[in-house]
Length: 309
Image 1 (cartoon, one colour):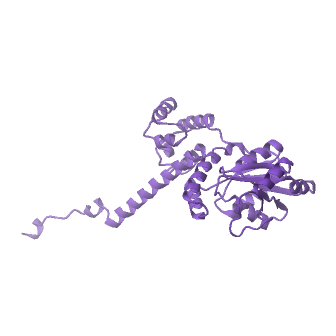
Image 2 (tube, helix red, strand yellow):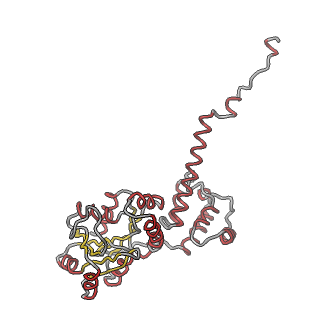
Image 3 (cartoon, rainbow, N blue to C red):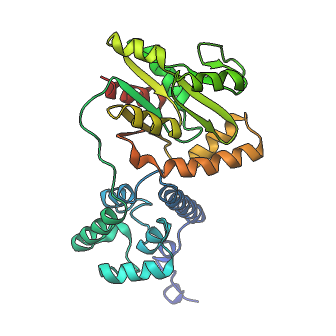
């Protein structure tokens, strides 16, 4: 065959099909993005973040996994919204079901946010300061670790020591971490009015906050930090309405689960019970004055300490 008659290879052949390594990388990115979208939906469903916060993230970065989430996925991740209700909401807001959160127009963003604010209003930080600060949050969120960091780095803040009927964990010291008492002594303290608050946690053990050390510290002009559970925080709010209530949040629902499993101090039945409790606790965060995310212990502790001054 003559040179001029030989068939030519297309000069674009190499551009029509990406190299195998590029396809593999693209596939990994797609899988990672799907996983992140799924994690975000869990965070909204479990109330680790508000629906408004997820919408803000999507609008701030339209190409992010949050921004790439379809509005249909987003709505069905919200509590008590199934497919039928989702479709009615989209029709009312005049938003196409094929839209992604990051691609919503100005009118659609405004309509969606107004719907969210009407259905799930975000808690507003309360003005004013109180020297009685309550730190609460879901199980395994790291309340004790943050409180211990505050105790070490902010000696002007008194960390209250609770009484409990549970047995000490390895490394816990009587009078420093808890006052370990039996049921009879706990009953006596309750009957004598010696506890500011008390509650049964996880349907097993009782915890309570002795009043005398707190009253003495407040009288002396010190700030007092109570690290307690949700039931106790509600009792403190009832007894001292000016108390500053701070809710500690995990960075994500998946991280909360990992922390609980990784702690290794509970069996499978106890972990299941605690996760169920955590869901209810997260749903109650609107009762608190401030919200702090425990993504870094030192940073979270500094933020809580700043609220106490």
